[in-house]
Amino acid sequence: MQQRNVPMILESTVDELQKRGMRVKGIYRTCGVKSKIEEICEAFERCQGESAVDLEHVHPMNLASVIKLYLRKLPEPLMTYELYNDWIHFGKTCPAEPDEADVEELKRLTRRLPLCNYETLKHLMLHLNRVTWFHESNLMCPSNLSTVVAPSLVWQPSTSADHVAAIIDAQHANKTIQCFITHAFSIFGVDRAKDWDDFFSKYGVEEPPKEEDAGNVSDDEDIVDDECDLDDDDQLFVPQPPTPDLLKSTRREQRVDDRASSCQGSPEEQKRRFEKCARREKRRSYTTSILISPNVERPLPVTRQKSMEEKAALNINAGDVTVEVSKVRHYTTNTDIVKSIVDF
Image (cartoon, rainbow, N blue to C red; front, side):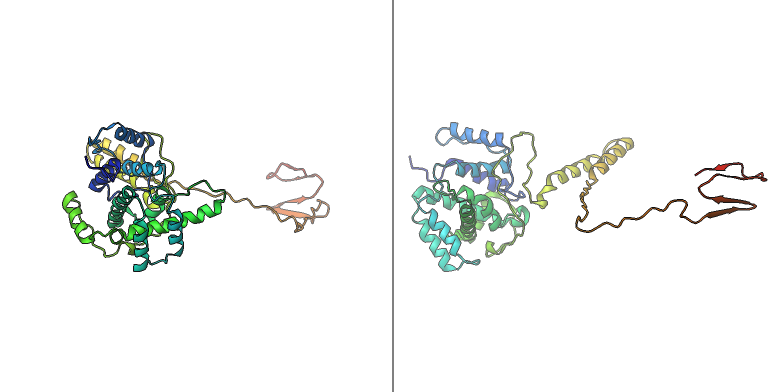
């Protein structure tokens, strides 16, 4: 039997993603459900030979998380410890717009990989480049994908005590993976035009607008890798902050379904559903508490309180009755209007 160069778990999950997950918002950057991911991995461990694992009903977010988890759990990174410094050096010296010489350098480095690593990396990078074809729907351009995928492909041979250096190396690794994704077809010598036609002929997916260079796609959103997956099976697939474009997608779809169902039923039922939807549409408002502390260096003016003796007498006129207000008691006499005592 011919030796398999690409692991079956990667071939199967990538194939299923390319069938129905390429337009999912935030694919690869959004957490899947941890229990479901572990269930899929265990199913592949149990399968014998070429027997397939049924992935037809698995959510695309879980499929993408399986790919990243599998790569992270390898005893050695797919791009090997041996070439770690080369990948970091390339990311450090590579310009913002890599030229043909930079692509040739990546070609040279990839030829130093073992055959299985080379074929698996090729399979993965071509797939990630195809994901960027649908960037207008999934919001995943090469820079966004590299941010969430690089930690699963490149890591240090041993834990370093220099955390600052590790962070800087991670940034260089991201840049290297971004270049891989952008120029995948050139690096691995694959005809992009033919691959485009073969892809849409095989999967029957609606074609997005063609772009000569996926690297021209820009996305200013900040992306954070999803190192921890969700534990709750019933939890919705929620994005990690900061990603405002995804925070509202799942619940917005639910509201649309509610509005559609509200068109059925009696008038009273429709009214009740409408009021329920209206309450859910209300946005939460937030207030920020501001603590104002006095300036201790600035003296506060003390206002001197005057006594009643120092104040001028106040006369209140009410028709024929005159009341003089002072510290002592006064009685009004010879009047039928006021019969009271003013006591201070």
